[in-house]
Amino acid sequence: MYISTEDINELKQKIDFLTLLKRYTYISQFNDNLYVGFNPFDKTDKSFVYNIDEKTYFSLKERVGGDVFTFIMRLKNLSFVEAYYYLQKETYQNVNKSTHDQILIFKQNAIAEKLYQSQMTDKIVIDYCEKRKFSEETIRKFKIGYANSEYKNLYKELRKEYSVNEIKKSGLVSFMDNNYIKDKFRNRIMFPILNENGFVVGFGGRILVDKKTEFTGPKYLNSSESIIFDKSSNLYGLYLSKNSKKDYFICCEGYVDTISLHQYGFDNGIAGLGTALTENHARLIKKYKNKVYLAYDSDLPGVNATIRAIEIMKKHGIKVKIIDMNPCKDPDEFLTTFGKESFEKRIQNALSEEEWKLKQIYLGNLNV
Image 1 (cartoon, rainbow, N blue to C red):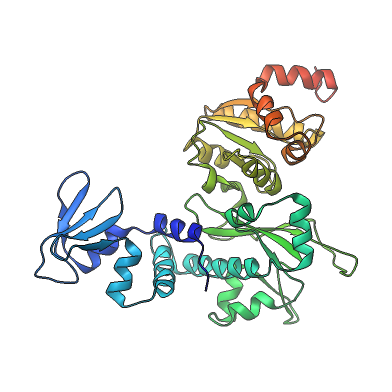
Image 2: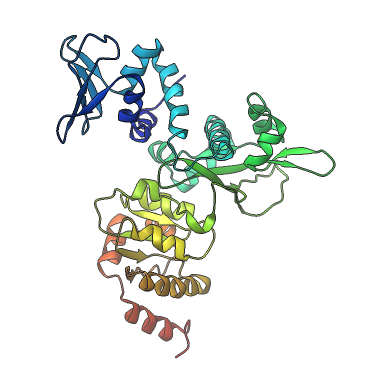
């Protein structure tokens, strides 16, 4: 089983190693950087040290140490892969105020994410990614997957571990009145939606249709809202963008726009989830940045969405500038047409609220 370096590092960030250590030994804080105490592998050894900044342990007596993976492998006598999945389960226990049902959905989402990633070999999704110019690194970074056209593919996978009633809570499978069962997402490229802590709370799926496939449905389909997923309280790309060194977010409208921004080096791109910017979105943004550059679509709905976003941002004390997307519709089209340097110039020449509104009046998109 291949586990990427990105997945390993992400899991390390989620694990509260110090809390885990305290289950197995007594250690107390020595200074700002260190905890010291008894070695859980040798209770006669009192020279066990935990480094807060590096998230590593070390035994002065044994002259050995390591990270959380090394620790749990030795403690539980596990292989690296076994330790990875053991620690992955541990992370769900650290989600704030988690209930049994919340953890249940988190775990089923994780299974769905892995299944969708394993199906990225289908030609239809490979062709779509090539058309969009998604690199392999970008696909891994955003955990992009594919839900194939089989009706019960995910359902069968979930039934290996969960009951029908448990699966119903996830919203990943549709249960019809006539007892007919089918996966909610089929024949779609899948964009996992992560909350700010890096847990998959839902999915967005874009339909993929070729000449051999007869399939109807909305172009984009999101997970149903649940006890862990609320479209008005989550921002696509936030988990990746919140630690950007840039002091502002670039806020756009969709999954592909966000992905394109990151692929072209703009690691501060975020987006709503098919809904207008909300008060909760603004509060979430405010936690990490005080400045936003809006890069909404240049059409009339995009203009109206920009007006609404400006007012909400101002209400929450967030400084706003607007990036002009013309003559293109959105960031993805602009970047693929004109490239990174041209987009950087658009950021440098971003418009203030007043400048942008004057331009929209001139274009006939706003009334005086």
